[in-house]
Amino acid sequence: MTRGKVRASVAASIKDGLAWAGMSGLAEPYVVPFALALGASAPFIGFLRAAPPLAASAAQLLNEGMVRRLGSCRRAVRLDVLAQASSLFAAAAAVLLPPKGALLLLAAALVLYTTAGSLAGPPWATLMGEYIPRRRRGAFFGLRNQIVGITFFSASLAAARALSFYPGLWAFAGLFAAAGLLRLLSFHYIGGMYEPASGFHLPKSASPAERPAAPPPALRPFLASVFALMFSSFLVAPYFSVYVLTRLRYGYLRYMVIMTIGQLVTYLLMRRWGAMADLFGSVKVLRVAFLAVPLIPLLWALAPSFWWLVCAEVFSGAVWAAYGMGTNNFVYELGGPAMRTRYIAMFGFTACLGQFAGALAGGLLYATLKGNAFGAMLLLSAGLRIAATLPFFSRVRETDAASAARPGFLLAAIGFRSVDVYPGADLPRR
Image (tube, rainbow, N blue to C red):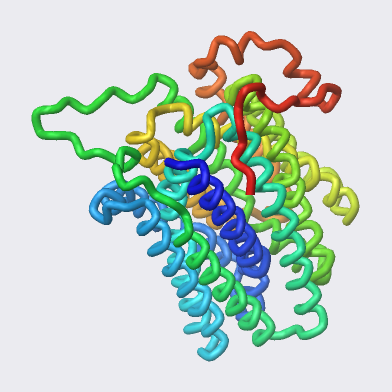
């Protein structure tokens, strides 16, 4: 693969990221407000958050085979992106239907949106793994995510302003239609990403006489902790929006700040956490994330004031940045190019299954608990998040001895030490 093709592909991936971020910022924070405007009940919100991860987790089982049959990661990604754009146009069309039909169409559109986005992840990541040197993946993806985060926040702010000036169902329809157009722009940019004709990076099918390779020992405890963490997080995640809009009665601007400031911080800090994962190892970064994640629901439970929740979400964003970059590097390190799609799909399947189970259980609890159901679920979520750390801490160790032995991690984690670019690695430039 020539340097010129790599640079062109990296530039195309950044443009795709900008279009994706605009789409996400216009649509994702406003799914629950759109459903509430259509007349959705709290149990339906739980269903709306549970059904898409279930479909996405089931689809991940077929992802490797689909990429193999298509014979191209890029072709698979573009097909998924086109389906995701179509789902956004379908969601926008929900305003044309009566309330019950509109909610069903919105739910179906969200299932397609989540499934297509989940399916696009592994083949896209496989392609990107061929462009970026191993020792620079964390730093590059962190930098890309910083750019993506600023775009996401800007799009969310624009959407909140639009909803404040033009409240009503047609405003939601306009936002989701605009998001669909941005996803079509992603479709165009992904077409500019180079894919090696040799196909060495594609998943390989084993012959009947060939014994399947044993998975790495760290894979199962890692996936067990991922499932438990997603379950405990999505037990309460669907109801943050409901709590802010219906219990605290904040307007769309305050809602947007609380719901997106954490994601902005996540994107802005991903570069630093990614560089730390490159330098000190992904396991150390994940340990910090697993230890800090249980504190997030406790912070929400302490005080329901606007600025306190903003601070809680800033902390949340920093923690989830560590989790995101730690898992990104860890999954890349599990196997070579031919196994990358499989392991990323397994990670996606496990995470989506945990999200489904958590959202489903949360919907049942929210409907049956008396009094402050949201507060009780926050405390339960915190306890379960602590339990989620056990498989990872007891059975997963750093595989790179040099990274594990490198001093200074704690000082870097709390911001008292700079994280230098890893020497000897050339990051492709735009």
